[in-house]
Image (cartoon, rainbow, N blue to C red):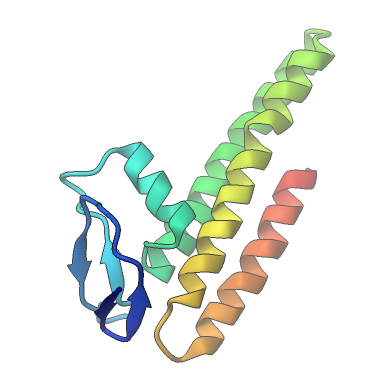
Length: 138
């Protein structure tokens, strides 16, 4: 077991470094090294909840979610206008819904590790569930 800044969890091999809480009230815990991690490592860190809550929420859920869902919605409409309903369905929902699930799980787990005040974590959880539900249905 590894204990760091009030967090207790199983140690696992990782390229991440331990990071302190940031000045804006971010979560203490394991933070990815931007210069040593690729997109899949960051996505894995999101899934595990290893990212700071503000990074998981704003970068991955809000901005990433809007980008992925807007792109897939446009591709969906283009494919539908070309009379390609099955590819449109796959592109429109096959990419966005899994991303939305990963974003919700990542924010949820990051919120569980967020330092007090815990209401920030609870608000982030509620907001991400509502946002991703709306984005998945549209």
